[in-house]
Amino acid sequence: MNVTVTARHMELTDAMRDHVSSGLQKVRHHFDKVIDVDVILSVEKHRHLAEFNLHANGLRINAKEASGDLYTSIDAAVHKLERQVKKFKDRIMRHQPRTSRELRDYMHQVIDFPGAEGEVETEPVSEPHVHRIVLREKFSMKPLSVDEAALQLQLQDDTFLVFSNADTHQVNVIYKLHADTYGLIEPPF
Image (cartoon, rainbow, N blue to C red; front, side):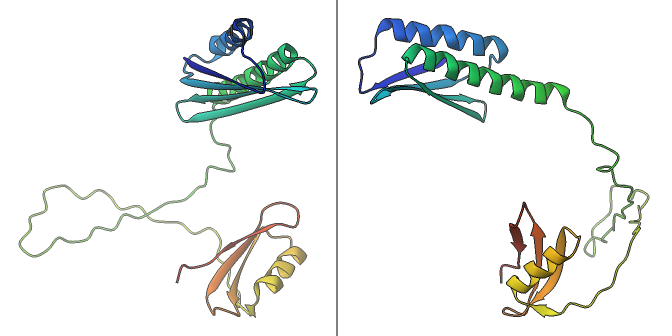
């Protein structure tokens, strides 16, 4: 594990380095694939800040704490970092299978395209599978502006709305993200 400790507006002592290293051993106990840890210790007026940035195999975890004492800030930041690592590790360990809602009952068909003339087919063709459509709906798309489509979606109980954009004359999809926020899918051309 490569630990880099930086001090801002203060002098870094060996006791501080040892305290950071001993705190990071707790994290290493739970998650041994830690590659780099960048630690920034700073003082701003009467606040002592400790910030930890952990990098491990594509995972980045950040923990930042402030208090009146530097060692308290370091301990709190290490505790927060340890909780985040445990949470990540638990998520990986419990890796639950998909729910029945996520498992969709569908069939698909593989279409075999004949090769160019003169080519000899060497692989046997497997039995084709067929898509099964369980619901089909038809609706008329009225030309709407994006604001009108958002209002229409807000009035409906659906999570998305397919509409013809009145400004671009293209088919767009608007969908709900969170409270009063929407996403818009539109073609690139």
